[in-house]
Length: 430
Image (cartoon, rainbow, N blue to C red):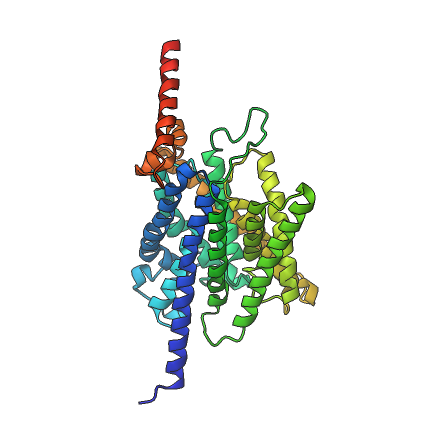
């Protein structure tokens, strides 16, 4: 029996969406390597464990609660009210593939959001507090925001254009990361008495760069996979704009640091490329290739400016989560209102779309920041949000996981001897 055309198309769409979901899930390996390379060696296992917690706990929470809140039957434009544990009324979704396939793709997105926050609080958040925050982000913060923008909620009804998540994922996650960094506070010794930032050297920049390359690879699933169709003619254009924007973000930071500092700064170039990817995520299907280059270049420069802004205010963000995701995501969201080839301001579409984009951006950013702030304050009533000075000094790998990334026992013994000596001196002084 020959399969029908519809059956073949459904099969192709299913393979495409599952493959895209797998590519997005591989981005977690990118987050792990990027963050582990940017932080000090004694905290690298903790980074890996947080990513595993994102994938395991976050996936289950999204299955139990988050998906229903995000894509369930709309209730007053605010939340979904069905589809918890993939049960109940979900006929309104009109999916091109099975519900299971669609859920897998959306779960991969959810995991990416929480991983943004992980980097901003690296090296000093209490691991138990972070586990509780995963439940909050994947079960409440992101799903409700996602319903507003993608699940049929009030921003969907207004006409918000956010193809793959510059606002819903990156701005939301980035402003949540800012709130978390403010609550947790800077790493010990990050700023001196005068407020000047001290350099905490990354443990392994080649490792961080591999992480960035994995993220770049996965982004093609992130953006092009959001077509939800293997036969969508826009896939090639989406991949092109994604590539050009990332290249422009990396190139502009490479040239800028070369001329300003007389050296090309590797962390800046890594984050510049990622900023370009974040910036184009909202408009990858809606803007021209030339605009994609502009979006990426501006994203890279805004990332640099936002990094300086954080440093001037003594806000510690070890991997640049806020500059890369919040600031670039904000710009990318607004850029759709300016450069959408059908409804953008510069293409004769008027200011309506730009206004909707701005409203959606402000709402999602404020929601992520406020609920993260309140949530972490409440979590702090249950467990300490911040690691102790001793835990931070020894390293979170040993403190929370009882193991180091590799055998550096002599360094650990030296640190322990130093701490014991300080404690002994303090005891004698009293």
